[in-house]
Image 1 (cartoon, helix red, strand yellow):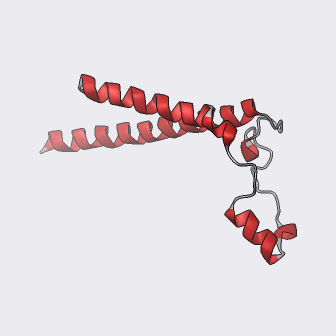
Image 2: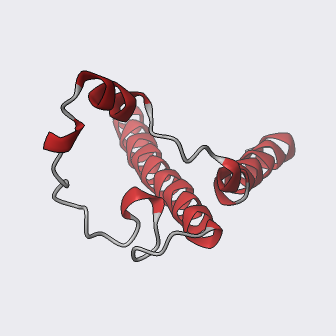
Length: 104
């Protein structure tokens, strides 16, 4: 990877972490479009918790605590997990592509 490409990756990750960790503090507390539509149509009361409702970052809350830190932490963890997953898949695909190309 070139120096410019590496710098671009670092800046991109830093911006993603900044948005996830700090800008998310200012997100609207109003219901999203699906929740709003369910309320308007009169069936919001039928909603059930998902199977992962008890997970550490359910509803962007850290162990059920509603504060700015929990939303920011959930965003940062989400960005890092997404990068790890995408990086792992990319590494596996590039490794597989190198092996296949080397055999030709």
